[in-house]
Length: 108
Image (cartoon, rainbow, N blue to C red):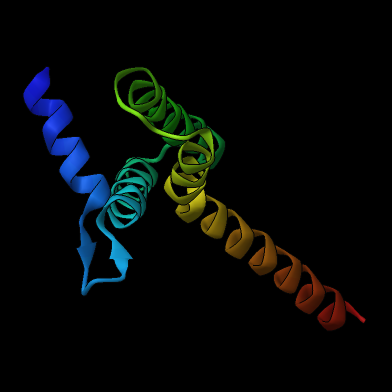
């Protein structure tokens, strides 16, 4: 357990190119990877969103209880984790709206 805490502590303080936090980058990459994997397996987007959200919250709850993490940082990390799901949902919604507009204009 102590080794895990030291690894997570290192990750949360390391910066790529001295300005990109590794922690935030990993939150995005893991959230995106899980989203892509589950969507390719045919899962509904809302289920994927809930699973990725639960993963992000559970990891941040662990951070809050085992390390000296701030609630603001945890909320930011969870939002980064689910951001890819949100982007996919927005793209799908915009695509649906544009498709309906195109079909409506063709029908007229």
